[in-house]
Length: 276
Image (tube, rainbow, N blue to C red; front, side, top):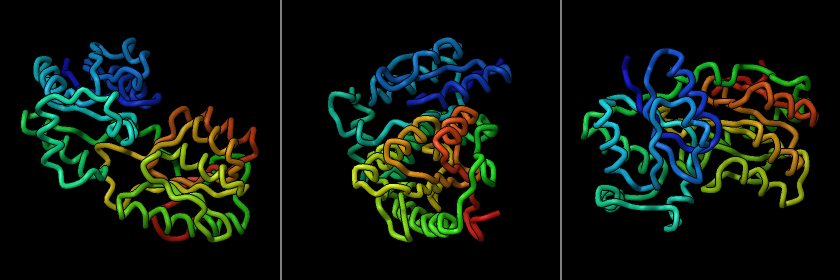
């Protein structure tokens, strides 16, 4: 039986990936982070090791000791946590890596981490083969569909989201009447949505797209029940996500909450008409 490594961040996605790998007969060797990773992972993974953020040398050593040559990263850890010293325990290898980076953009950080693992013969793979059933399909997923005005805002928001993605700023915008209310930055999708609510502008349209240069090995766009909860708080009404590149954790519960709140969730293409 082969081993597969898992670097587990927040949310339920690491649980889905670990379960899929275990179902296929893999032994899952997981690196988890206290205060971030769901402890339920221990019931699925063959072995789970709890580290602090920044223990790069230890993570590599664990994988090598267990004969792991392929790993998957699942579940996000917001970059803001890497800027809070109390969350970190940087070892010498991590410090060297940080000093070598030109900037702290997501693409820079994640590519540098992947290169560091590769030096020890460990390859970070795309997550989609392990979570394909979680990817958003094309089309309207809820009972309600967008109206004509909302379709126009979805098309506008797609362009804006792809624009900030190309600059490696974020993946999500909240728009209304062809105006950007909020663009996601370091805070993450849910907090960006809540920030739009703080501005007191109801009925916003949330659009989340993969970055044009999105590396599907890590930081794959994702939504879930908490996204809908944030929209309820912010009084947003439509959520459009890129079909085939956005993961929906707990699909049925996400749609159920959206239907209960009379919201719209729709999977849209990367280009062309947004309405199918």
